[in-house]
Amino acid sequence: MERTVSARMVFRTIADTKAALAIAVARNPGYTSFDESLTVTADGQPVPLQELADHHGGRLHYMEFTEPAEVTVEYSATVAGQAVPEQATLTELIRYVRPSRYAESDRLLPTAYAEFGGLHGAELLQAVRSWVFGELRYISGSSRGTDGAVETLLHRRGVCRDFAHLAIALLRSKDVPARLTAVYAPGLSPMDFHAVAEAHVNGAWHVIDPTGLAPRESMVRITAGRDSSDTAFLSTVGGRLTLNELRVSAVVNGQLPPEDPAKLVMLG
Image (cartoon, rainbow, N blue to C red; front, side, top):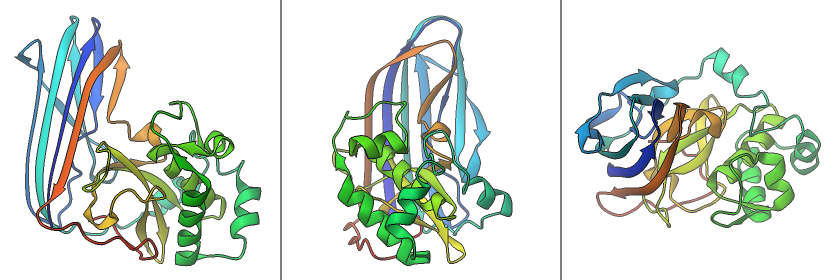
């Protein structure tokens, strides 16, 4: 499968701002071709970028601005082939079964056992996906950046990251390692960066998307981590910026694959 993705953003910084982008497609040895371009300009002048390795093949691009500036970011990539499944280390399996900032699995343990007490493996993944899909309403702009899984469950609404956080917390409550993964998602509407959950069952990472907004087989990884605190597409690590424009595109060459929520799928 060949996928073409792009992202454009415009933001304004104050003086002495340091920022990091996480918008590049994760590197994977299974891709048969991988062509990408990333340019960043500040008031029309090229900005030096430092590429840093992130978790699970992801990459951060770090930049500094000594003076206030209007910054334009343009990224595009065409990826062909199928990603090689990632082998989880014991350290990762331990990390991703622990509670985290936005996936408070310790607080949702009673809920998880009440709803999914006797379920395991693929059956548990399907049950959690269906339950979150049925319990929450997808409403753009309905959640705050500080909301975690507990707050999402109380309000019964959210966006993709909120759906993913709740699924992750419920899975971790049942001792299933789970992580949040940022992706480009062909077929998503409205188009944006997308967040899904990945759970480790049957010896491999499988993706679940409780929003049901895009076919999982077409998605391509950007990065992954404990929750959205590890996967933000734009972070300041000093100073301040204001995001004024964001446009994301993701398409496949040909027809989108059909989506079967009950099928185990690994990100490709």
